[in-house]
Image 1: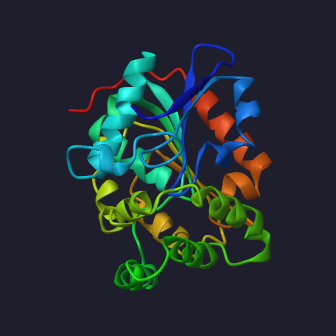
Image 2 (image 1 turned 90 degrees about the horizontal axis):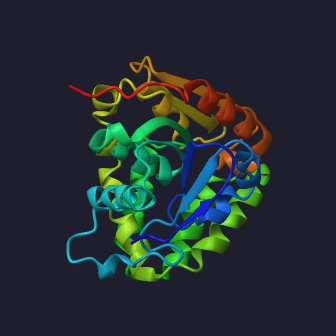
Length: 265
């Protein structure tokens, strides 16, 4: 089972945090104490991160379907029927796929630095990475993408945090996650159909140049989606603008915590 921690807070509602590739729950260090004042918080380390099983421990191909099943297994273990989810970067990708595969488990979703698809430029970078990934240390590749995604001086704290945490990851785990990048678009393709009833808050930095424009375009048809783009902020918006992120996310979850379960037809 995935490594998880239940941070006992206030009330009966649960908020589940999911980090991005190479990150750990430390990426939410500026959220945990604030959210515990209002909710019980669950942090989960995705496969290949923290003390969770490495990708080679599974007896089946490593896919996004598998990742979602592992997250649902944690919910079952804790006996959580429905929860509010908060994801950052590829954590938001997992939540998108969860909303397609098991929408009945998601009460609301806050998606920070969300990725719905890769642009021509980012796809080109990924293809270059695929071509050289066996020839260079994976941390070189990770650092390259970290600087491309978070190039400005005001992104330096989040960039350093991601690079520091990624150093603890095994090469085979990183490369397994990297091989999932071509399937990112599929994690969103049916969200508006399968999860139209789930309230979604998208928080992105206006300087999240690889993803913010495609996110804005792709989510236009979703009436249950609210979007906020933060000034002077890049990809890891919960680290760069923690006060704004916390206020927006808490208000959103509070306003949607009493919604009844609606089954998808």
